[in-house]
Length: 308
Ligand code: CP
Image 1 (tube, rainbow, N blue to C red):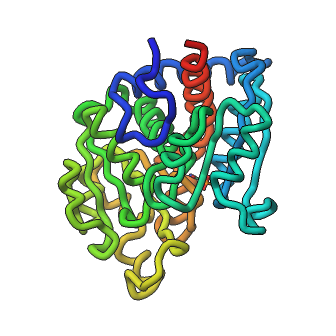
Image 2 (cartoon, rainbow, N blue to C red):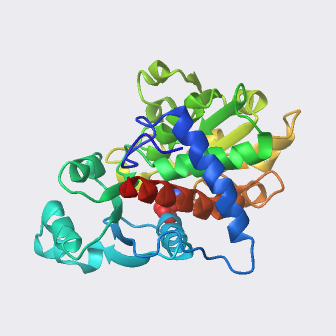
Image 3 (spheres, rainbow, N blue to C red):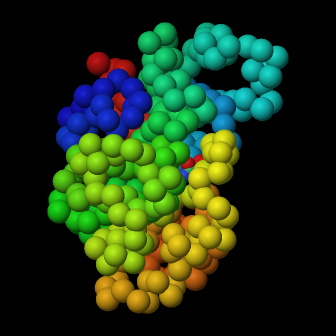
């Protein structure tokens, strides 16, 4: 079995079969990660460049670990300490790096479409590690993989995504991924942070947090992306937390156990309280753990395609 695509630019353009192949490959790599020796030679002689034009903790470390566990040669680039600061363009930067014989590029960039642009100009395989407010495909895959571990097949399961849907690449990639896997998806947040016409993607829209929690099997709680907000979308963080925050009190008031997720970074006390983030309902750290296996699977499957 092979992926249907040479690059991972988003979830929108991959198939349900691709998603299952990634999950089945990640199952095997998760087993490797639990061995005393967590390294396999699959990407020996493959060079991967991690190009981060925007801040990251989890995604960057997770990709680097995944690459090293697969025995790839790894180079890291951070825009803040590069010649981008001297006015070099994205294409010039990447072409200079690729002339050093790089096979795969993992890229995070603030501009939506930056990985697609690159894929049209260079031969290396591109993995989108988050492009502005557009997509964050590896986050959606690790989220759905973590849900599958808890619930089995996601067909017919109820998944709610809470918070700043408007500015979230995680929300869009999650919606594409979960819909392809047959889940029912609702978004919940203040009307100002829910994009108009999002229902066209086949998701429900709800503004009442308690009603949404009563409906869902999984609550995926997102951060307020203040860095992408140029106007005020709600009066204050305190008011947001009061009406849309997920806390122990509201979870205790519903008559079922639900799974709570968050892609990180968490703003504790804003979208989620510590007594929920650190509770038995939360699988936030399992998400991070699964991220390495998912990223190993994607790197491995894309590298296999380069051999064809
Ligand atoms: N979830 C996520 O993308 O986190 P980072 O911004 O720390 O990579």
